Image (cartoon, rainbow, N blue to C red; front, side):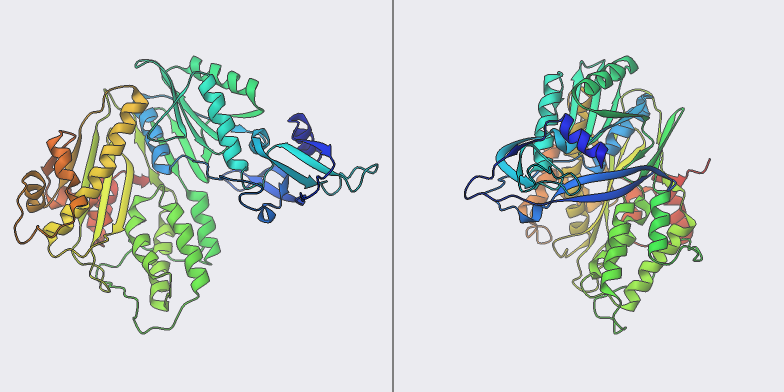
Length: 494
């Protein structure tokens, strides 16, 4: 608590003041937390002084509160770029980050418990900088960090507002921001060290060295590869579900299992079901092999049944047998190429007969983004379902190609998209409106425009080599294991 108060004093966060007529002071409270490492060992006892932000009124105490953070797919792109080129990835943490944010509106708070001034016990404090708990604190901190990085010569990416670049085409530094965590990589280790010194001059920073633990994800950097894994997090999910000692399963989904909303089985505990599904959805950040299974189970959170819960437990049993699995990002040569695969089933959802799109992209042979999502329209043919999935893949590919160009300083290059449906490929290349395609919504013809503008190449791939297949339908054990290995998910033990 004394360390927190010292940090507040060093930042000149508040000044004693008299409460103006018509204003009101907001209360403070202490929050205590144990910070642990990937193995669950306590590394720090932390006390945080927090404002009771729920008492703030929009328009009076604050206006805008939104602050961007790096998307996990952007983090994976940064890791894939670094691994391909053989760059180290470093990690820094800002101490008491929100205390650095400057406030635009006047805010008054009560004195903190345990540190009340005996000479003026009823006095209030006027905030000049943000405190944790304030609704506008994240936005104030982001504005401060953004201005500081721009002063250091960084340019913010227009495609991802928390990714910054400094340097030339051949020598540059990349920084990704998630609130107070900074991921740093680049072509020159000397530039990284210089940037760390610059940041430590501006803010109180913790230099955590090479990236090893980030947002619950364990990252292992070895010669020639970087491997993110969520083993510790997965173990906590199993313990939370009471399945830490369950028998493992070899696949997360049964091939012939068809779930529906009304299956006649007794209702399950909806709160527990939603909680476990939420945990599993975060685990998908390093496990594309369970993306389909988790996505399908997520459709029944409104009123889950015991049959749905049994299906969720199969995912947990599968995780139990693959705790140490994750993605590998390998070192390559030359400029990394962007390759995507799109696929779809046809009418797989038995309730509304909508199809499931599967999209996966690889950068330099390493998987960087994947989605398994139910389509928003009912497809009247397999061609239409594949075409809708290809349109979604095109949107993702265009964004990724632009982001890569922005990060590397090169021009935007076209990407490769593989589809296993020849009719969908023909429809994307030829503006033919016949009875089977004239009803397709205009937005799905975006792929045709991108082909005309030479932003991508579309080619056919055989079903056996369609890597997005694992994201659209349940596969037999042998096929599933084969596809899992092809998309880069493997055991990372040792």
